[in-house]
Amino acid sequence: MNIALGIDVNIRYLPIVRELKARFGDALAEQSILEVGSGDQGIARYLNLPVTGIDVAFGTTLHPKLKPIKHQGYLLPFESQSFDVVVSTDMLEHVPPEHRFLSVSEMARVARKMLCLAVPAGKLAEAQDKALDELYYKLRGEHYPFLKEHVENGLPTVETINQMLAKVTEHRTATIRHFKNYNLAIRMIEMRAFITPALWAKAVFRFLHVFSLAPSLLSFGNCYREIFIVNFDNRAER
Image (cartoon, rainbow, N blue to C red; front, side, top):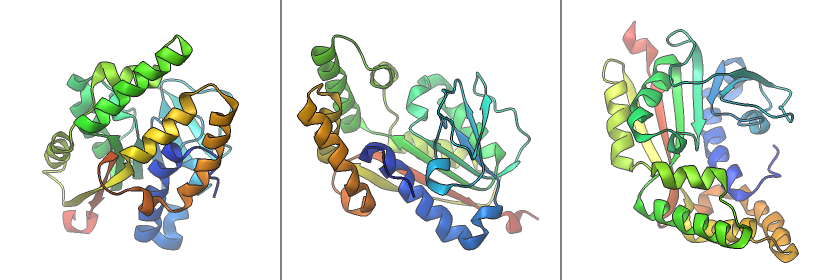
C-alpha cells in the first residue's frame, strides 16, 4: 500500500480501504468501483485495483489501474446502480451548496452496494481552512486553489449530509453511519508544515506521513472530516 503522500490524503482513504475490505474481503477485487473526483490517483493508489475515476480534469501522473473519465456537471453519465462501490473523498466541499444535494443523490443513484463519502465538515473545520488560506496567502502571496474553494463555498455540516443521505436512500434499504476523521490540531501542524516554504518545514511534512499507518489514533476529539458509509442491502429490494 502506497502511503507516500501527506497524512491528510492518506487518512481520508485508509479508513475507506478498511471498510471495503471488511465488507467484501477477497471478493473486493471482483467489485466495480467508481471514484467521483478521483484526480490522477485516488483510491486506486491504495487498492491497486481497477477503478473508474471521473473528474473535471486529469494530469499526467495517472495511476495505471485508473480509467479516467473527464466530465463537467453534477449528473453522472452512468446507469443507475452501475457500480458496486462509489467513493468520493474531499470533493463535496468544492461543489457550491445549492448543487450538493444533486451531487450526493447522483452518487447514491449509481451505487449498487456501497457508497463511501469523506467530507470536511463543520464550523471548526471551516474556521481552520479559513485560517490556513490566510496563512498561505501571507507566506506565498497567492491563494491555494483548493483552500480558496473551501472558504468560498463553506463546508457542509454533519447534520446536512445526514439529511441528504437519508433523503437519497429513502426508497432503498440502506444503513448509514459516519465517523470522525483527522484531529484538527494534528492537521494544523501538518498543514502549516505543508504551507511554510522553508526546508525544515518540507522535512517535517515528509516525516509526518508515517503516522498515517495509525489512522484511528489520529481521529479523536474535534476532527476535520467525517466519513459516511452507506451500505445498500440489495437482497431486501428483490
